Amino acid sequence: MTTATHSTAAPSSTSGKETHRCLICGEGIRPFMTFGPMPLGNGFRRPDDTRPEYRFEMEPAVCPKCTTFQLVRQPSPEQMFHGEYAFFSGTSKRMGEHFRGFAESVRRDFIAGTDPFVVELGSNDGIMLRNFAGWGVRHLGVEPSANVAEAARAQGVRTMVAFFSPDTARAIRGEHGPADAVMAANVMCHIPTINAIAEGIAHLLKPEGVLAFEDPYLGDVLEQTTYDQIYDEHTFLFSVHSVNAIFGRVGLEVIRAEPQWTHGGSMRYTLCRKGVRPVERSVAEVLARERALGVADMATYDRFRRACEAQRDALVGLLRKVKAEGKRVVGYGATSKSTTIMNYCGIGPDLVEFVTDTTPTKQGKVTPGSHVPVRPHADFAARYPEYALLFAYNHAQEIMEKEKAFTAAGGRWITYVPEVKVL
Ligand code: TMP
Ligand code: ZN
Image (cartoon, rainbow, N blue to C red; front, side, top):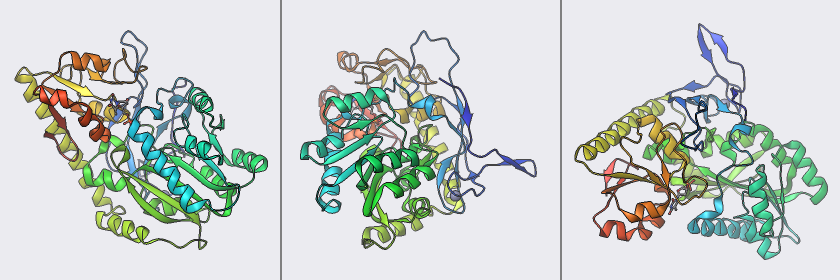
């Protein structure tokens, strides 16, 4: 693993202040808050690991020209997505249903011809493509992590181990022909070199082909103060404004925008070459919502920073109060997002006894930076705490249905979305 942090363009100095360039359009971007040195969101480690912990300066910024919300610098991709990458998407039942719905809608609306071909970027363990495999639709997953790609192949999902690039796009087109649909879920926002990805997609698509992808939505982050969406893997938080700017550079436009519940608030964007398919009403509706939110105004981000500070103070105040009352608090779900919460708020083992998580590769480790032990669900169920801090709020419905015994025993949930509350 390398420890290099890189910012795309070398910062240039104007009147002694560093200027960082937009990853999309090259304009000088405006940082609006700093989280200080943060560990990797997914950097779980053994409690006896004494090596220095990797950290990077986490600083979100907005481009005044193309409106893209982005991190000023990010760790190299090799640092984050390697052979031992801990994240398998196929673990939650509700997520499986969600991706089935995504696959069904693309199949229904956009792949009408004979022998269609669907490509998914960052196809993970095949949670989405397995649907196309089941329907007998020609498909190909492009996945950089070898271990998750292997899991996909074991389910009959055709997968190549690669980072997608214009070269990869040319190779795929040469071997399989152009694609009717290119799909991605929670992938685009991770890729600093998205301009090259866009170029590859434009090359790979048929003239009437579509790009359909979804990612955490900037609008929800601003509305609900879910600043935990900001972590090393999320280079970007998109809006319809910025997606049109990014993909407009290669001749694509958003023709449909559909809000999703996943990941605490996401947006699904469907794009196609300009003028080829009608732009649906949902696009104007979401653009209006974004204008009302002020996604292009710097003042919006100053307000957002203040809202983050207020939410942090409220959460820490609540945790200190219940701790002073001698109550136990256990975190629920060792999410990547919770790394931002714990490190920004300074929540450690003094406030949260342990975090329970069902992922075997996280159990027995400690949380990144904050070093709170991660333990299996059995440890939570064996002796319920008075409070469970819901880090995995994006799975709130599934979790609360499952944990009726905890609330029946008098346990209470602590949430911080959209505000700090005891439920
Ligand atoms: P995610 O936000 O990236 O989907 O990660 C959710 C994390 O929460 C993952 O580490 C698994 C964990 N989790 C549980 O421990 N119990 C649950 O019931 C669910 C749904 C998730
Ligand atoms: Zn820009």
